[in-house]
Length: 105
Length: 105
Image 1 (cartoon, rainbow over the protein chains, first blue to last red):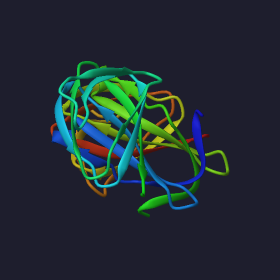
Image 2 (cartoon, helix red, strand yellow):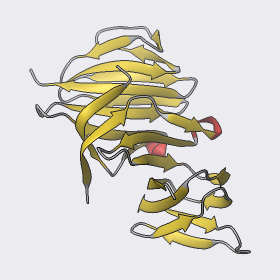
Image 3 (cartoon, each protein chain N blue to C red):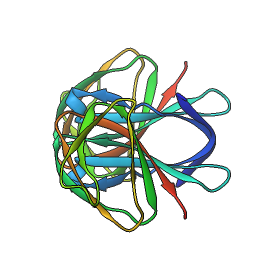
């Protein structure tokens, strides 16, 4: 699980929040798309298009999922799912490394 | 030149300077290794092992190469080369996106 083989890596980064959140897009042979990203400490709100599966690769983040009224902490090895076409809030207290998978429904 | 095909992408990020400099490692079929990275504003010094070819994909950085006594600005589309086993200094004033190639000599 430490690497993705036979993939296409998009050179240019995706940059959000003045570079405090950045990611690289990885495309698989079957067309599936993931991003490998970094979040620096800060408070963020994101909107989803496709459903997202977020795997924490390093660090930690506090997440308020759609329909929840509280933040839960996710750390290295944890995963959370965000429904399609929704919004979620994040509080990042230490540098977080993540892998986001986009799921067509 | 917008993407690298048939590569292996290492999941975990390389994190330096409290996350102000991060990169992802991409490995090619012939074993060549590149990193795709982001530098947030700051002053940095790096040491090389292998010779490095640095291509600026976005933003800009001021670079003082080994043997030089001044900083030169490199911006999107520019490339500079750092000799093996040397040190170079960077002043980053805006978020910089880069691709670094490691050249075995």
